[in-house]
Amino acid sequence: MVTPTRMAHYEEAVKHYSRAVEMRPNFALPYIYRGDIYRKMDKFDLAIDDYTEAIFWTRQPARAYHGRGMAHGAKGDIDKAIEDFTKAIQYEPDYAEAYYHRGNSYVIKDELDRAIEDCDKAIQLNPDTADAYLVRGNAYSSKGELDFAVMDYSKAIRLKPDSTDAYVFRGNAYSSKDEVDKAITDYTKALELKPNYTDVYVIRGHVHLLKGDFDSAIADCNKVMELRPDAADPYITRATAYSLKGDFDSAITDCNGAVERNPNAADAYLILGMAFSNKNDFDSAIANYTEAIKLQPNYLNAHYERGNTYSSRGDLNEAIADYTKVIRHVPNHIECYFSRGVAYNEKGHFDKAIADYTMVLKFQPDHIPSYVNRGNIYGTKGESDLAIADYTMAIQLNPLMEISYYNRGSVYGNNGNFDMAIADFNMAIQLNPRYTRAYYSRAKIWLHQREWEKAKADLTDAKDMNVDIVVLFHNDYQSIPDFEKQIGVKLPDDITTLLMQQKEKTRTQSVEENLFRPSSEIDRRSFEKIAEMRAQQARSNPTAIHI
Image (tube, rainbow, N blue to C red; front, side, top):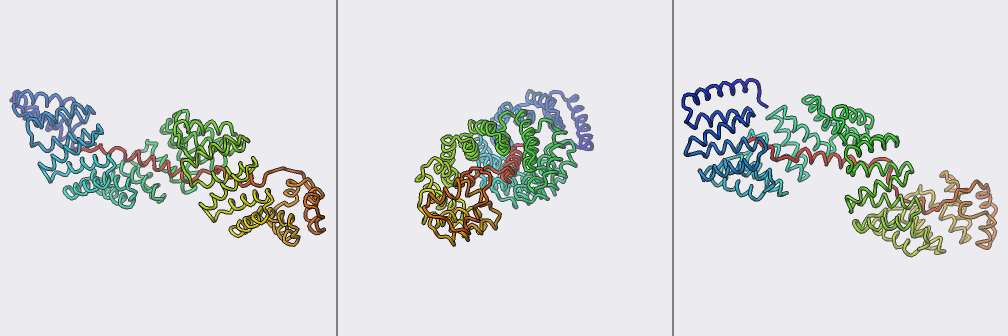
């Protein structure tokens, strides 16, 4: 932004060169000089007129073509800019600036190899031109060749230590390489050189978020709000930081501030929904997700989070519709297949649930919850071998997860393989001594094996841990006489006493209660994904270079 003082100097310079034009209207240099000033004043059309006039009056128009190319580029007419830079090179083949400015235009057009070729030529002609390294660094960065980009930015800094752009772009490259401390150091240096460089506060704030330094991210957002009080973005970023700190009330306040400044800020509605979901206010969460989707119908993050909230609220059809929407656009969206599988599972659509869990495992063969949940369905369908195979795979992937042992033990127990069941229940209890259902389930096996003292001990432990063993027993068996008839022996009186206070039956499947579900609370990763997405957006324009 041109300061008033500098603008006054420019206006005086325009008057001076205008007098020169009046005195010698067929002399090219005053037009070029005045064109340069107009370009610095952002009066690009006037600059183009002057450069065009200069081209007409001189036999050596390279500088005029170069200046006009820069004016066209500043207006966004990149093809015209390239034409003029090419003309300048034709008239003056050793014109290093024309090469790297044309290279910068090629970066904007994403013709990165041509950009690098032009910068190579510029550096060959003038090895000490910092801007050529800067432009080539941008080209390498856009190609994903970040190490080469860092090398070029570092060379530019050595040649021009006060180049804020070089520090910012190198910081962006470090950020993309996940070297966040180096990135923050570079952004901080850029801010030392240019204290009110608002965009750098924005970028650094996002990198602080990714690093997990939420207080520093909030401080950067506060600075952006000071410099741009009407901007919605810093409120959204700060809301993300508050969310990651677990301060959802402050996040909601900031999102409302963002919406006041920009009613079309879909990200703000998404974060609002996630914050309300974490507060278990599912109706408000769904309302905000829906608003985000109205603004961006294909906002897949909003569909996914709304699906999870519908699922938590028990609206399974609506949840399935949202998950399906995401899967249509992202056919390898693991989380959506898994969550939809859970919804189908709870609706009793077991084959569809199995299909979704199987898709998860196709894309991520080590996804333990899918093995466990699919194993549960196989167990419910009576396909014991498949159930055991899935639980066994889950155990191989993580031998310390008690749910897999418990569920496999339940299948072994239902099949009468009592020794294997006991071994699995033992392991589940060893891993989690407070795994109450394992005590009850092991007690049932002891009863079948007529190990009365062991059964009594497990039933007592389960009861002491607030398990309603009476309800569980009568869910599994019609009555004590019914169980005694099954095993062919009368239960000891002390065990009968433990189990005889029959309550209303609420039939459940023991394995079904050990189902992995999407959490009703938003996972931190969801907020981190927003932070990463916004960080990428903030550093996505390395071509905004003033050279």
